[in-house]
Length: 201
Image 1 (cartoon, rainbow, N blue to C red):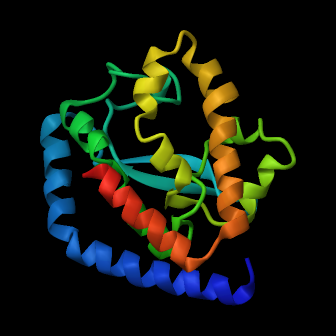
Image 2 (image 1 turned 135 degrees about the horizontal axis):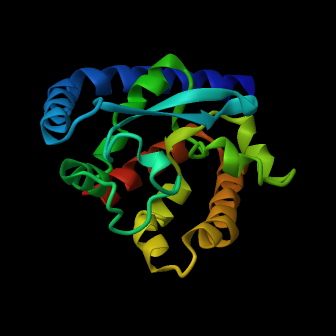
């Protein structure tokens, strides 16, 4: 991506994330209160992900699982995972748990659109070509998020969810991310954002 496109994308991200946080603030507050009354633990789930130029950052999500869920099972969520809270199931269904990432976008760790950031474990499995996805900022949504809208259900049907994710889903996601990088422009970003909203309705 050239310098001009980077500047345009950052301005677009900054404006949209600021407006989004302001406009959605009443909804964010209601969700936060509901999470606190539904189960013990913090409102936000924080996790180390790998971003642009292989830099680690802390991604923010609304907490949808019990406290210390990662110590009780996989790093991927499979089907009707018993670790998911009542309100968490609702938030996941409509992707509302991703809304706090507007803060990540505002801070500059993420973009509205870009390859979804992975945990270090999976990034360490990338080959040289796949690591090109680390040349751009990760995003809240991407082409892979649209295709794999029902990823949890797919993993729930797999005999070995980890193997299925690593050997089937992850390579396809990365191929879509590389396709996005090659075509990257603000109009494609707007298209992906609109398509994501439609998919979530």
